[in-house]
Image (cartoon, rainbow, N blue to C red; front, side):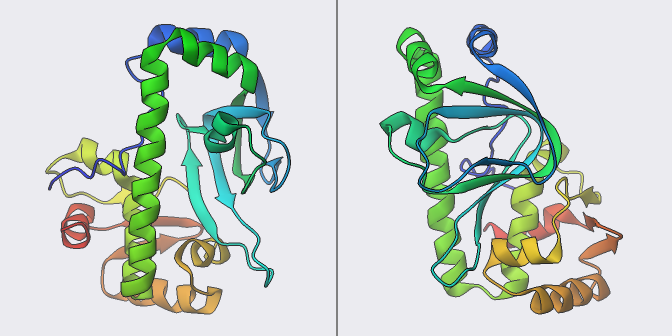
Length: 229
């Protein structure tokens, strides 16, 4: 299995202990309640956020009232970056999927840190580049893949850090974010009924196990190798 560089969003501050310490010193730590709206489209981008715990969906509202989910941000990730860098208004919405904790830093303080630490600025460039590559792959997936393939790719994306750690051990892996069928549909350009039918077929085929709100990928590395060739 070859690692996919654009999927591997590890902790943003990995190997940057000094930069993390200064970031946290200039940020405000806030509790994050489930369904909490963090920012919305068209509001000024005055802060960016480091997610210590929990999960957040990044989405947009279309003219037809649909809400496709573009990213799912998880613990250790920095988000709200793009507009903070150029000072533009928000283009997306951010809302908590689960409760947790985040750190909010104001744009001016973040800019000061970037000017003082080249390593931090380089990390921001790396992360934004990785996300552009991920979005390009998502567009390709929506154009050429059926719903089961899109759904399996989503599960692999959400589990990717775990799968890399597993290396060659092909053991069942729990999807770390509990998404509703409606949210799974919003992530894959589908609808709730199709997702429900697809999950049922995948379970019958032995690809996944669904229990309550938890989904477990069975033989994840086998699936990953097949999808990411």
